[in-house]
Length: 148
Image (cartoon, rainbow, N blue to C red; front, side, top):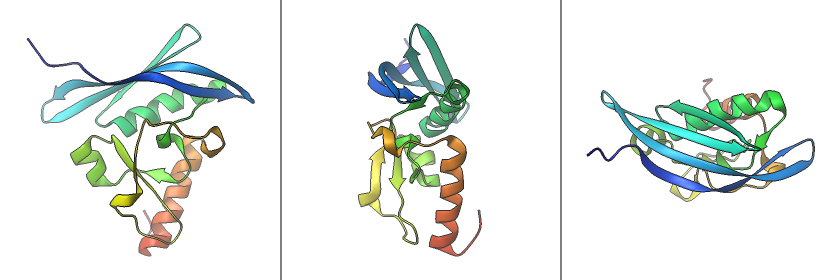
């Protein structure tokens, strides 16, 4: 019998649109492997609808889920949706994107800056995928002196 899929996360999270907040069920799965690469799946159950996304790490699965929610105006209040969070390559490759760094302008990150990707965050910290990616590019240039 296979150990996959394996449930990694199962809890309620806050979601909001246009100032209207509610709770939704969030589930994160390790579905197994596609060759040497793992497959992570995230599901959100919101008002009778099921949104799902799969990728090679949990952060990318979350990004794909957020891209599905954004056209409807929905935002999900988890650490991985904050403007100032992003995973390193090592977080993605070695940890499956289950943790990400909180970044500060002009500073490099350290282990003390790690948070769980799917942990709760305040709704006022949440931004769109495009805003998060733009801020990460700005942070990278300020921290390294190089462009992404």
